[in-house]
Image (cartoon, rainbow, N blue to C red; front, side, top):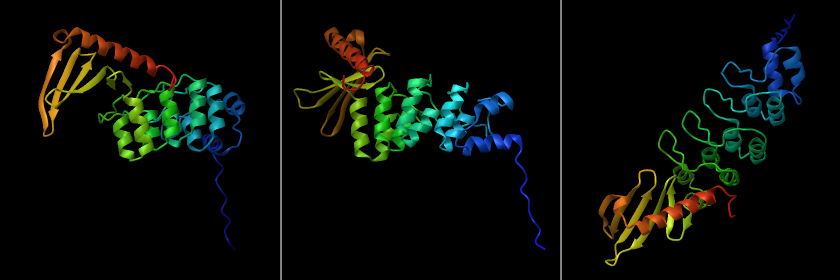
Length: 253
């Protein structure tokens, strides 16, 4: 006779996670009211229910969990937010829902210091990246390897992404280009034919002045704002204000 093998029934905990991953309609009322589970349950790996549901393609379940009180900012050991997960998948619809309906932090950083915007670029989702930029994602944040969005864009070798990110990270006003959170740069040719580049940093209130020629660097110096012609400092300040205000508007406004 062939011995029959009977499957061991799932425990209540196992059934909760199985339903969360596979059920077409997760019964929040039963699990949270009758069975005394909470929307912020974590699995054995330390990941919250919202992350487990999303990783298994259950977007509607995620929304139900959030409506039931789940912490939308909860993460697992990787500190990966729901918005980062959506961005890495190019899930523009869910990313929009999160930003429209919750207080999720668009600029939150994971354990490596990367953001949702970084993830959208790394996984080559230009529409998602542009959407996040339009909604206020900060492209100048450095991760813990001191890389910013421009570094990530170049690694993709995707010309559409590289062009878009360069344009968004280095907007111009008159003859000034934004080159960081608090800095603008202007470049001009000297009478001798060399290139003079001056970067005005409004946090340190210093100007980095670099002159280069055909054979490379000719000179470099750091000058305090107070030692610069104040007309130029004022022009740089105006450019900084205008470029900052543009970042707060939808792209193209």
